[in-house]
Image (cartoon, rainbow, N blue to C red; front, top):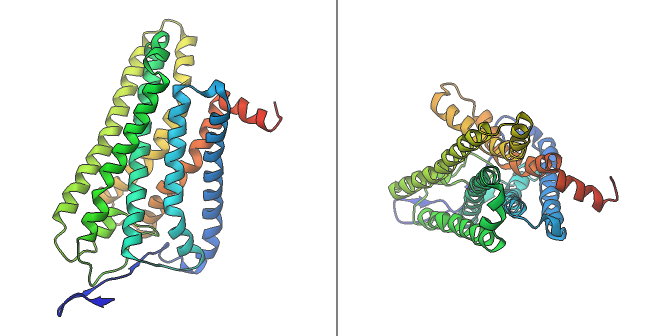
Length: 311
């Protein structure tokens, strides 16, 4: 720490934590965490490799799936360094600049995943509502532009975070609530006025909330369209094309909803439980999305087994 002026001591190192009360078994906890990261990275790289090398998978649905895999990889690689340092080596210190950079990438890739799930719901609606015009509407050029716009939007939306946090003064408190940096967590450590950060963070949260609302609306229209199909078999076939996406949406949003309810109604909430759910939010979607899409998407499963010479 160094003296900022005659009356304040400014924090130059933030302290990350693992799971309170379980510090003595952090080394053991690191084993499943490492395995989850390994499977998540391998799984998403495999999805990208299969889609990249198979011309039959060069279609809008799989381009959006590639974007989902990229956001999952970004989320994993953004949180991996500090989580492993905390649990494996008990190295809990992190510089403010490194912390600001990490929270930028974590929030950026989180928003990108939310946006990709939204556009994938539109993709499913279009495929069910107007299958004959699907390929003419979602051309490769249009899909590329959509993916690029969402990527730029996510990065630009999060770009002010590091700069607004850097402009704050941090003194007295230095301990964060997780083994990685989040905007609200860092903001709460500031001893200077953080009104701008609070309202901008609230605006970003509203943007992500709007994604979930539009996803829900998409499925209302999907169900309405499916109910208009005469054949029961065709209705089930149409809904089956949405199962993977529904699983991905639930995997992504359920930890967020659980945390929101615990913050709002958890009168006796356990810090360990909150931290565990927050860790699940970062670990589980990148782990489960490749598994869900490999199991539920016949084309990917078939091509993947073919790569290993299996039927």
